[in-house]
Image (tube, rainbow, N blue to C red):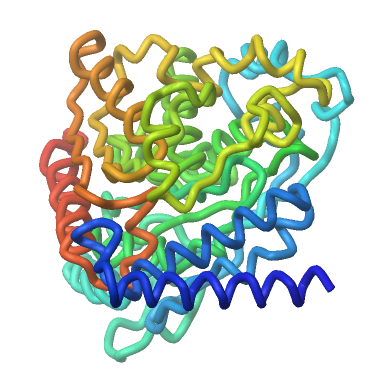
Length: 416
């Protein structure tokens, strides 16, 4: 019965949005009808899901998938790891141990699923480099890669190949690399690089710092030499990227690596990063009418994903003191020493004021190299709606392409 009601209400909302668009025009000047309807539908899914809790919302995940064309992606499942492997490989592991809950999580074995995504444009560019270096790892004389492991089971396919480590969004309680494949494919196309995406563990089953641990392990696997079980990418040839919670997680990983005096990626591409889990900025209220994101009726409750992620013991009281932790809310951290950042947001999204505050701190306090653009009328992670081909999408992915090229130009090659 609830499922029937979900579809009836959803279709009614789409009809109402269509009529409103036809009679009154778009809610915001840069919205097309298709973009408007997509935003309306996802907002409906999230609103309905919030009434049923995290598990119900996860069951509705398929209802949120955009019907995007991902033709031209070669995908390979790859990374399977254990928590103990991470404990033995991540430098200065003891700095994370005090952050564990007392539920025995630090002894649990688990696997980290992952996949490599490479667009047709990236394949073409990679083949050119491989031909120039006469790499034997794949057949470059055919229009398609004949061995999937050439794209997804090897380290650098040519000297100093660069790669993107991508972390999906979903408020730390939802999401997967498969659900974000339409976005990672587009990032691969824009940068002409392979994208390595992981499924980090989610709250509430696995609260902080589990997602951070999985991210650090994935970075370690990418950069460790082959004799240690890694892929052998140079740290300066890795770009870390993520959207929403994944963007905040990418920043947390950078802060951790800096705190431990470990080599960091060359830069970060952050799409609407979740940098402050307090939800107190003015745009959190002012943009509710525009964004598809919703807010918990009671911020200090277990209906709030921020609380579910931060709590060490399943209680609100346990979570509240941790919301200021820089590995949870990076805006409260010491931001000095981070690599160049590209940050994109939309002026119509809930997080835009939090992101602007973070950028202000990066540039005025920490003196970081930050490229920040707030795209007019755009909503949270608007890049994921690229199938509607708005001017903002073209501009955003062109900016991502330029940023990746800038990092390439600034990367110092090792001396012979």
